[in-house]
Amino acid sequence: MLLDLDMNPGPQTLKDSASERIRQRLLDAGQRFHANDNIAAYIRHGELDELRHEVTQQLQGVLRTLVIDTQNDHNTADTARRVAKMFVQEVFRGRYEAAPSVTTFPNVAGLNELMVVGPLTVRSACSHHLCPIMGKVWLGVLPNASSDLIGLSKFARLAEWVMNRPQIQEEAVVMLANELEQRIRPDGLAIVMEAQHFCMHWRGVKDDGALMRNSVMRGAFLNNTALRSEFLSLIEKRN
Ligand SMILES: Nc1nc2c(ncn2[C@@H]2O[C@H](COP(=O)(O)OP(=O)(O)OP(=O)(O)O)[C@@H](O)[C@H]2O)c(=O)[nH]1
View 1 (cartoon, rainbow, N blue to C red):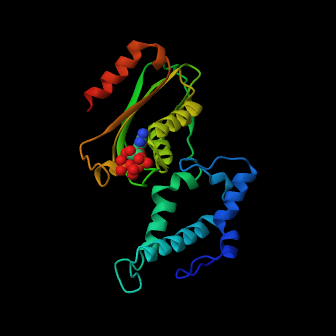
View 2 (cartoon, rainbow, N blue to C red; view 1 turned 30 degrees about the horizontal axis):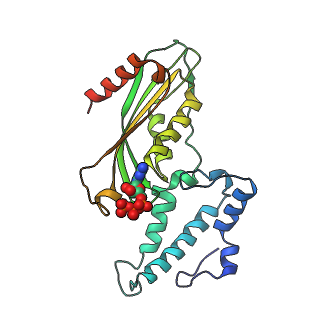
View 3 (cartoon, helix red, strand yellow; view 1 turned 180 degrees about the horizontal axis):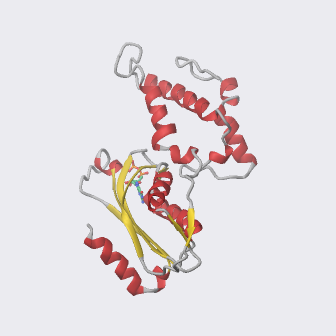
């Protein structure tokens, strides 16, 4: 479906739109679709392109409402299309794409020692102002003999998939922990995230120095203080 960028969508157009079809499928399935939920399973072939066109059209309306002359301003003539592409295919793609495939390997050596991965560079956006969140993530995994092991790069791929959604940092680390726990089934899992929130730097209180640091501790990291301290001291040394 091609949409006319200069027209606001009428009710008929909206009703038939890809976004409405996808929304209806989610509602029919009783599935939550918050900003940080992945909805890939409800999107059919070709609908992502339709969605991008729709978002372009709506952004064109926002620019018009901001009284920007996109017809004569060469700098903003193509902005709606660029921002729509950035949202759907880049910075929020973790909502629309299926999870990266993660090969798991049996823990044949029965590894049961602490493994630390990081810092992984992560980029997200806050769901309140859609401003960037730029940060680092450290992961601690305590496997047991029946855990699965995953390739090192898959920690970064899973983190990117989870972070590429609008959200708050507290929920982002929990979601990442769930994804890792499901695949590895370790005795313990720890995540620390430290990030800058541009909604605090660029606007609002304009506090350039503030960072947010939060963590998730699961399993052995909750009840074994020596393990938790070992993890925290290992990542502290790398700061
Ligand atoms: N807890 C939490 N808050 C966040 C995160 N990202 C952004 N925020 C905050 O979300 C809040 C949104 O609050 P509101 O008071 O509704 O928005 P606002 O009036 O624009 O807030 P100001 O930023 O103070 O101007 C702000 O305080 C942001 O700093 C996050 O990851 N976690």
